[in-house]
Image: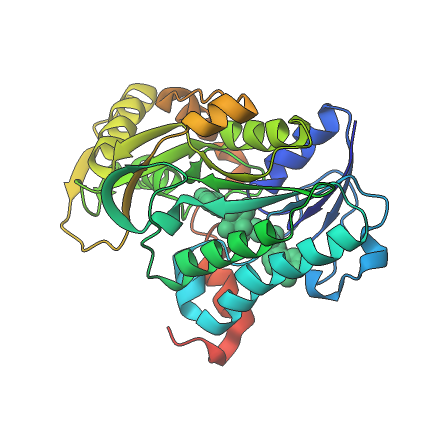
Amino acid sequence: MSNILVAGGAGYIGSRLVPALLRSGHKVSVVDLLWFGNYLSIPVIQRDLFDLREDDLRGYDCLIFLAGMSNDPMADCNPSKNFVSNAALPAYLAFIARSAAVKRFIYASSCSIYGYTNQICNEDSPTLCRSPYGMSKLQGEQGVLQAHDDKFSVIALRQGTVCGYSPRMRFDLIMNTMFKTAYLHDEVIVNNSMIWRPICDIEDSVSAFEKAIRVKHSVSGAFNVSSTNLTVGEVGRQVKEMMEKAMGRKITLMINNAEEVRNYRVSTQKAETVLGFRPNYCASRLLQGILDHRDEFGDFENDQFYNIRIFKKYEHNSCQY
Ligand SMILES: NC(=O)c1ccc[n+]([C@@H]2O[C@H](COP(=O)([O-])OP(=O)(O)OC[C@H]3O[C@@H](n4cnc5c(N)ncnc54)[C@H](O)[C@@H]3O)[C@@H](O)[C@H]2O)c1
């Protein structure tokens, strides 16, 4: 079992990953600024990751990076802070982790680096992103991979849009947002039905990190991680169908024609072959998982469920939105 530091581990993915790692018997520490609160059962070191030094990382076997700005609106809100948090920060942490003899660094990358393409992207496909978020995630990935050597394995998990229940819930992610409007307003809004998105069940995301921790030490590199590729129109249809069944009410599908800068499908063949990743997508299970926890959420419109709203509060007047 490993001694693992999860940087940004109190967020949406971390709040599912950390309990899973503890259940698997790993020793886990979390450093997080707690922007969105704390739903973990272990004490969190509330500290800015920029303030960590080599000595702070000694003794860990593995560092998992889940921090930074985690969506386009946050990145657009303060692009300069975004590039520092998503590109410079992971590169810096990989640099000091290697010096501190940490053996493995796992970086939460994103399929948004592929930008707008009609191809099914594998890890060698061109990266056509032009948005601050996509560009910064690509830079972060390049920075951390640069640090790899025989003694320091670096794995970048390029996740699709992660969806499903987490104790630190987000309703600003495609399927979770559709769940919310179906549940509250009997309506699912599809911004552009033709656009493709890799959808990643949060359980598949967690299992990819667990596989990456365990894979043999000689493995480094980038891996697509997703459960399935769907058009946004199909995601909307699946949410409508499942929620109608679960709630016994008619749900309206609203189709808009919004412009989109992201459109991509991905192949997860490399993660399946090298990491042993086994995606397991089931829309009704994913949505039922959120439905089962609906009483926990209280007011679904609470700012805590929407990263950009909390971020704007922190940013005060420096935000351009
Ligand atoms: N959620 C997705 O759909 C998705 C998809 C692809 C990639 N990712 C990547 O996965 C990672 C985790 O995503 P998430 O949805 O859990 O994000 P999140 O916003 O819920 O959590 C990020 C956490 O990082 C912490 N943090 C940020 N900067 C910090 C700093 N300087 N020092 C200490 N703590 C800091 C925040 O307090 C927060 O708890 C992110 O890097 C994101 O870019 C997410």
